[in-house]
Image (cartoon, rainbow, N blue to C red; front, top):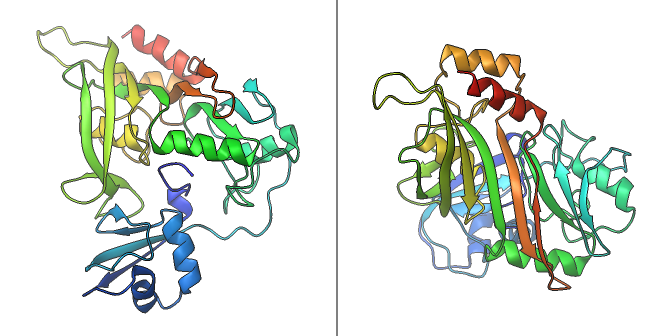
Amino acid sequence: MSDEPLIEDDEATILEARLEGGGVRLDKALTQIFPGLSRARLQALLVEGAVSRDGEVVASGSAKAQTGLYTIILPPVMSATPAPEAIPLTVLFEDAELIVVDKVAGMAAHPAPGCESGTLVNALLAHCGASLSGIGGVARPGIVHRLDKDTSGVMVAAKSDRAHSGLSALFATHDIERTYVALTRGAPSPGKGRIETMIGRSSSDRKKMAVLRSGGRNAVTDYRVERVFGRPAKAGGAPMAARVACTLHTGRTHQIRVHLASKGAPILGDPVYGSGSPAAAVRDAIAEAPLARQALHAAVLGFVHPLTGEPLRFETAPPPDMRQLEQLLEAL
């Protein structure tokens, strides 16, 4: 599995309970504060990375329990196995072990309640047939990592279990090149730098992620402002918008969206982290583009093939909605 649980935040059930005292095995202690879950179910959730204490993921059921607030994210129950669907895919690379695609915006990675069809998994099942790794489970065959539904760009999926294991190891050790392109409200300052924070569940909204002062997991993003748009005439004025390249060194949920928002430059069109309104000219450009999602594209994915050892690197341009928005921003 990747270094983040493969769970859709807006479709998961979140349970919380406080544990006082400790000393016994964690999986046993959790059955006492979550009586509706069996010990076997809790052990599986621990392995999946769905259990955290004070915002930090805990994965070992045999470890000694510690006092704290425990959060469990229950993935939605799927009513049926995904069905193959003949959905066109832009395939960048494919062999007997894995497949790399340029995912379109609006396509979820895998089925979930409210989004049972039209996903990347449905398309891969039709394209690859039975040749998909089963490690991800019945609902997520082949899925090693995830892009948000409304984020476009390069994704890799595993066709064999050994490829899945190898790719998961690369993601776990961050031996993956991942660069994203974002269009932001304003621009982060300085124009180039590293954002290193702890990211975890927001205390005010458990379905959102946030930068935390304590708890959470370490998150590292390098960013570089590539272009600015609509710079005010006065010296030192802030631009209206920017194109920012972000390189991930960790893979936390919503990492780039949270990090850019923490720098006062949220991604344009982001319905969750895009607090504040852009300038009127930028709003008009978004409407004319038209952009109906966060302006974020996974532009580069590079890794060493887990079976052949071949260095692989894939780069795609942002799709038409982002390209058109950027052209409109250039005219500001």
